[in-house]
Image (cartoon, rainbow, N blue to C red; front, side):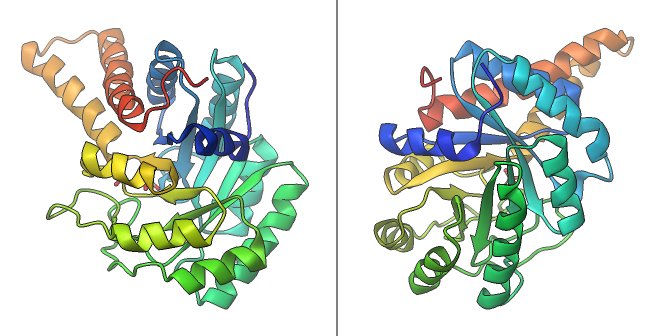
Length: 281
Ligand code: 13P
């Protein structure tokens, strides 16, 4: 199965009324574990890395590996650049063969966000790649370095943004936040419902870690077609490795490698089953 585009996966998810998981990775073991889960469940999937993570996982190293893993997978896998902040890195991802990029203009005014998104769409078109944008503001921050407050997406803003840009996927802020929620998240389903009825574009939910299975299902019933999961997979890898060291201090390196893969696999599998994308490859 080839490396595929995000928009195609999301259009199919729209028809089938499920969501595609977009799973963050930071190393080869996480890529292997995520794809193993997708293959076992015969599920389409998206593998992503955010710009803020590149200090740990340089794009010129992890990018080609992600693209190559997707090309060799038995299921359709899109490779996505998450929360692009600079045109330089977005272009680098496109050049490496990422099939979609997000440009995060959520801190800009609506007008500047639209202009920035259009600029990236022009660039992405040259590579036949898709573009995701965000309006409103998802709380927290991708790497926990900031604690941004949540600013719910306005329905009129969403309409204007989409009619002006025609972006391929739109991330909404409905009370969701990146990282670990300090209290149980209270998602605003009314806003999501209104956006979904007003704008004909696949909607994206960021900050998947800590959202209940019930809320995921409700979001999917209201038009969410891509769900981003990062922190929960990192935590699952850490926990799996910790268990290994709790059993014995003398750990063979390759056992550690195996446990990292398994940690990513377990969390990705769990989420695919909730998102309903199994057997949709
Ligand atoms: P979490 O870390 O909360 O799962 O959020 C992931 C995300 O939205 C990446 O863009």
